[in-house]
Image 1 (cartoon, rainbow, N blue to C red):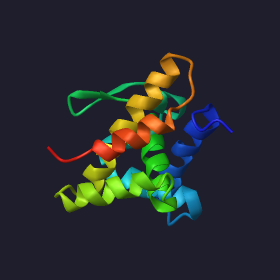
Image 2 (cartoon, helix red, strand yellow):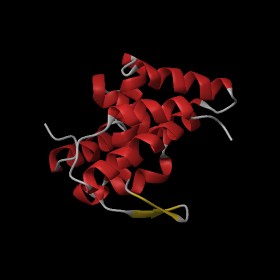
Image 3 (cartoon, rainbow, N blue to C red):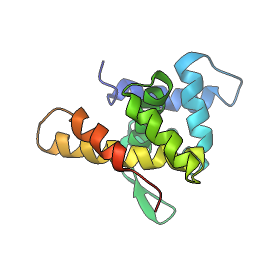
Image 4 (cartoon, one colour):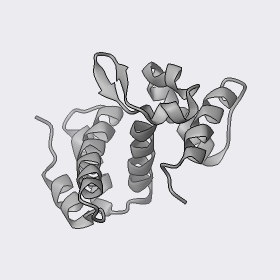
Length: 140
């Protein structure tokens, strides 16, 4: 399954609506919790496929769907400790004073840079570069 397909874009819209009614289960609940961390993205979930288009948010340009997908991917990496360097980097950043959310964003930044570069070059994600970059990631 392609995580970035239309089906998942519409799934996010559905989750945004269903979370207003009550708690969800499994990965849908994880996605709902990530949505709650980003209330500034709330207006875009009703757009369905449009949530995967760049949007102006707080003076910057953000792709809401891709942002949450990266959140979910990195959060899953931390929870599964794979690669183990992801959790090590997360704990190090929190120890250095970042909030959990800011530490997650720092790691997402590294992940996104490597993922976007690989996509532009029609290459696979370079996990060796990811692990190496994470080992150098610090506050400041």
